[in-house]
Image (cartoon, rainbow over all chains, first blue to last red; front, side, top):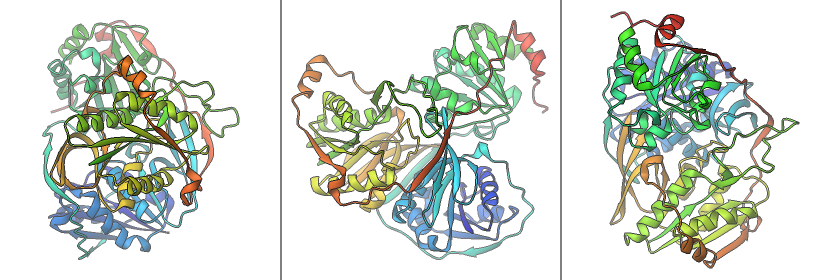
Length: 308
Length: 249
């Protein structure tokens, strides 16, 4: 088996979820290479080379890979795909954007959001918002898949892989990167935070999320939101936890003013401890919560803030 | 420019799905079906592009069982001009759907394809990217803002870290995210009008494409369920029980 992992990075640094993907690859077994495609991405590549169990880091550093444009990066992966039996990316907006494009170019059926490696060709994934788990098997020569970060532990960083420079420039000219507005936050990333506090439609406005932010800052937590809160325009979509947003599994998940729609539960029900604060005692969120508090969030959250 | 918009028939997003008795699939008997919510956003966007004079015609395409006609009628009621149903009794994988769609794109000389970012049943989120790959054109996934000018599409994408703006050459494939628009409610006159709009039915097998599934589903299980926990009486009890403390500075 030879496995290629597409690294998740922002050129300057390697994202932790890459380490989850490495653990998944290790469970398949065989030689593991990491691809770092970007512009001025040398430091991300150096960081990737320290991951344990990696044979080689392959770096494609060129302006055409800035912004991880799917057309160019997919063509790059396609150009080296025949060297591999598995092509893996973390289930991030980049991984989910690029890998299906690679798979179609190779005429194989990709797997999305794998949660378990059963063998080199058999995997588990969730369907229907996590209400069912399917065991799926592929006979395609190359397995292309994204893996769910929260389902795999982090690989160690005690390695010293070799770094190879790829000079391939796949500048297709179909698309152009314009800019990126990154949300600057001192808080941890939603998908890797130990504690997450999320607000739902019960928050009533975006301004009221400040209450959650105050508590989050005291707990070192990330702030999330339900789809209903995003839908209502309270907060941006990058805060969305759920089937169609981000999947999180922190040690502690505090759901505030969230009713517990199926699509939200899909994104957080693997959290170790779930706390729900909601004034509706019949809200479905209480059926999955380890601890529930039936209270008006506008009383309970400031009180929690005070108590900390 | 002609726009093709894809529509998938899925289980209603508010219905909890159960696994069947022999663990071979989910049980969709008597389950309420609906248009996939992200497809509905795609239809709305296509219709808005026509209303803005960007599109000359909006064609809705569904690939699946014959009952998908219902969801195509929904798309026509929102404002699509006509519909095509490629019938297949067997569930098709995104790769096969993308290949069939690429045929329609070529036949109809489509300039822009709009799809939902994922369907809420199989949760793959692959079809748009695979279609763009097969067509050899640019893709704009997770789109929350879209503007067509001259031969380009300028769009804003919802990415993990925030928002990304990119520009694509036409033709292109766009997948739609939640905040792109809020789909209108079809009015009764428009629902009536939709019944008379053309809906052409074709057979998937007639396209000469290998539609055989590449992925075997060996088993479908229900996940471990969480048990409801305890109700606490106060915030102080919560803080005490969980022993939550401010992070050491």
